[in-house]
Length: 48
Image (cartoon, rainbow, N blue to C red; front, side):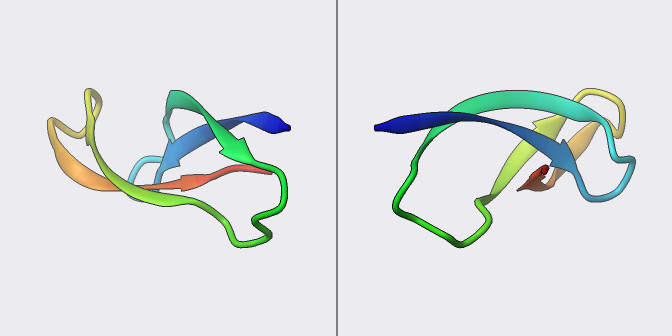
């Protein structure tokens, strides 16, 4: 089963992306994505 999660920018806390994640993985997802607000590629982390 996969779970829908939201990714937020570490710099400006803007919630820009949503994706699916495997429920058996307990670690928080972290990806380098483009932030429209910052105008550059930044780290995006899974929010609660």
